[in-house]
Image 1 (cartoon, helix red, strand yellow):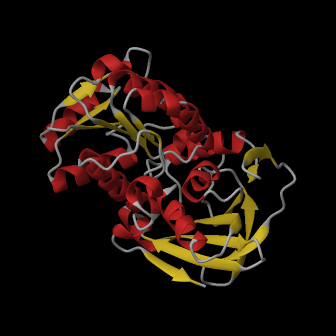
Image 2 (spheres, one colour; image 1 turned 90 degrees about the vertical axis):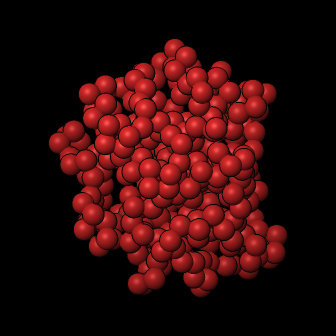
Length: 325
């Protein structure tokens, strides 16, 4: 039997994912670094657990595992060691990171992973599943697409883990893909996007789509933006933040993204994707991705959700709609 290992299972999103995996009847185990928390949660779920750190010895803890799904962020502190451990152990690696440098890392490790018969598939949560699928969809609406712009809407409050990951994203600087190459664009200007309730100002920021959309669509020029509403990007002592939004808060704030593609002749196509709140969407999409990989849907080396599961993957998650503008 193929077995899934959920790493970081006692965190805010990892816990929801493990509960969903249990509800689906998947064969899985949970793992992390905190033995007491893991033991208590494993007893509730009725599944085995493993305790190990994200270090050079992590591969020794992956015996009998087919797929590792990493929820332990910031991913700059966990993804490198776990990717390398998976390559060494012959285990497919998935995570939910929004940190662009982790996609660049997976891209660099792609050839080594392929040689070992391993897939590296970061970003199976709200970032980047909806935007990856939408980019493929909109690109198909334009002849000879040459430019792609993606805007995310970040409503409501942010989890403690996501806030720490945002620090990694901001630290990467403002990047864009220009003629196929990632370059620094510190002077990139904000612009307006309409998520369905009128144009709002969005600022440039570097998310994983600058890597995934390039592989999924082949469009050589890509820029990313984000609309920040309310207290979405908290400041101060992040350790004092709550684990994450409550179920009621998640139900209050749905998530949206806009993709705009320009063709060689100047034709422009736009579409909006709307989903349940990103924190509700992520465990559903991540476990569905893991389920499909366990069933044999995989691509060796560095991979993107749209290339592995098809452009309609985002809409396989209940409550997801796409509107062409």
